[in-house]
Length: 166
Image 1 (cartoon, rainbow, N blue to C red):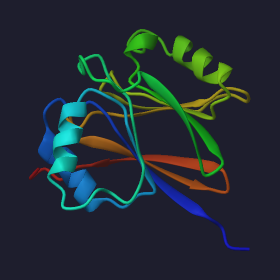
Image 2 (cartoon, rainbow, N blue to C red; image 1 turned 30 degrees about the horizontal axis):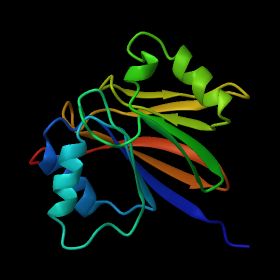
Image 3 (cartoon, rainbow, N blue to C red; image 1 turned 30 degrees about the vertical axis):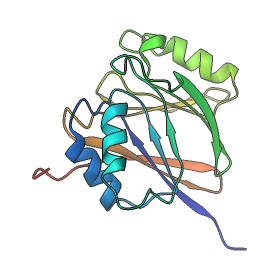
Image 4 (cartoon, rainbow, N blue to C red; image 1 turned 60 degrees about the horizontal axis):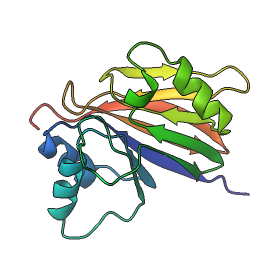
């Protein structure tokens, strides 16, 4: 039986670096994209510049700098046998501790909690019964984004950088 593999992108904290976001949208292939806030206007503009929308779903949440955006502050999405909880992170005080985020995502049955806000790449594997925490870093500070591959319900996490010329 063939094994299904999924490729997911995670992007956060664009803060006006739309050309970097456009590079990711134009050069990366994926089965889904999680946009974790602070740059929803940039995302809308980058998508408007495309001749066709991406062929994959985009899961979006607002961050603390997305004032007035109608997008939700958090969400749950099953993908490839994995339940993702996704949020920007500011409502869970992630700059001080991951405890609230871990507890909230765990209470919802999430396998993985995706978040931004800190601008720091983070991977914390959860103990049994607790979610893995993953932060893709910031497209503004350092130009990093996350790449998650799922095979047989198991996630592998990594980061990539937008080339320096962008």
